[in-house]
Length: 309
Ligand SMILES: Cc1ncc(COP(=O)(O)O)c(C=O)c1O
Image (cartoon, rainbow, N blue to C red):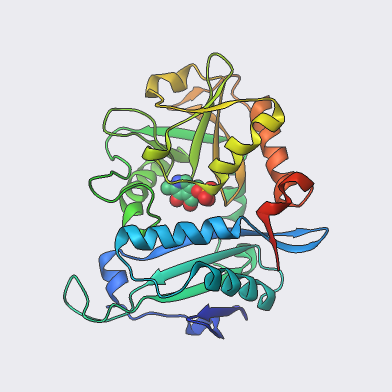
C-alpha cells in the first residue's frame, strides 16, 4: 500500500481511505467524470502540463453529464498543484468527480459531487504487472479497425465527455482485439470514418504528406491532440482536421496516436498490414521528440503550457 495522500473535497486523506461504497450512484450508473494529467520534472522544478485545459475539460464533462460540480476551476487547479506538492515524485494526476450517494433512483436525491485528486507514479503506486509489455506496445502499435462497436455518439453521450460510461464499448472491443493479438483498436463513426482509439487520438500523414486528424466533433478533445496541432507549424508541417475514410489508413505513410499517457507514439501495423515502411516514421519521431521537449520545459516558447508547482 502506497503512502500517497489524496485530496478529497479540500482535505488530504490517506490513499487507502479514498474509497466509495459499492452502491455509490456513480459506480452503479457509470457517471464518474475524470481527467488524467501529466507531471514532469523540468529545470525550473516540477510542472503540470496544461493543467487549466485539463481542469476545464473536467468541468465540461460534468456539465455534459449533468453533475453539479461545486468547485470553481481555479480551486481545482490549486487542489491539483497542492496534491503534487504533497506527493513528491508523482508523474501523473487523476482527478475524479462522482456522486457517492447510495440511492435506488436514477437521479439521486442527494446530488453532492465529491471530487478526488490523486497524484502518483503508476510504476511505484499502482498495480502494474505488465509494465514492460505496456512500454513495448507504445513503441510500435499494431492496430485493429473496430467495425462492430462504434465509439462515442452525439445522440448517446457526446465524445467530448470523459465519463466512465463512454469507455465500456471501447473496453469490450479492445479486450477482444487483444485476444486476437492486436495492441489497440481504432473506432469508426456511423459513416465508417475514423474517429479515435479508446484512450488516444489518431493522426495520419496522408498521401500528400499532410498531417490529418478526425474533426473535433467526432472525438474527445485531447490536450495532446491540441498540442500536436499547435506544434505542427513550428516543425514545418500543417495539420488539417477532416473526415478520414477508413480506407485512407491503408495508404497513409504514417499513423500516430496521441495521449497524455505517452505523448505521441507510432502505429506500425493496421489489421495485420504494415503502415508505410512498418516502423516509426520521421514525422512521428519529430512530433514525439518535440512534444517530449515541450513537456520537460525544453522549448521556452511553450512555457505557458507548464504550471510550476
Ligand atoms: C477517448 C479518448 N480520446 C483521446 C484521449 C487523449 O486525450 P489527452 O491527450 O487529453 O490525454 C483520451 C485520453 O484518455 C481518451 O480517453
